[in-house]
Length: 107
Image (cartoon, rainbow, N blue to C red):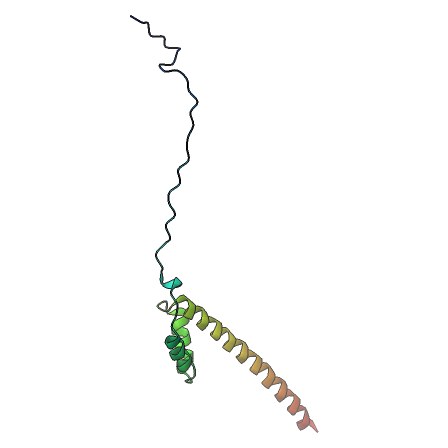
C-alpha cells in the first residue's frame, strides 16, 4: 500500500489556463426613444403651434407633461426657451424705444 504524503499534491502539477468566454452580444429591443415621429405627427404639431394660446399650453404639456416622445419634449422645451428669449428681447427693445421717445417730451 502506498503512503499518502500531505506535502505532495494528489495529481501532478499542470499549468492552469483559463479561457475567456464572452457572452454573445444582444441588441436591446427598440424603445420609444429610438422610434421615429411620423411626418403626419409633425404636421399636426406645427399646426397646433400656429394657434395662439393653444401653442403655449401644448408646449408646456409636451415639454413637462411626461407623456410625449422625448424628441417632441426636447423640441417643446427649446421652443419655450426661444419664446422666453424673444419676450425678454422685445421688452428690452420696447423700453429703449419708449426711453428714446420720452426724451422728446422734455422740450
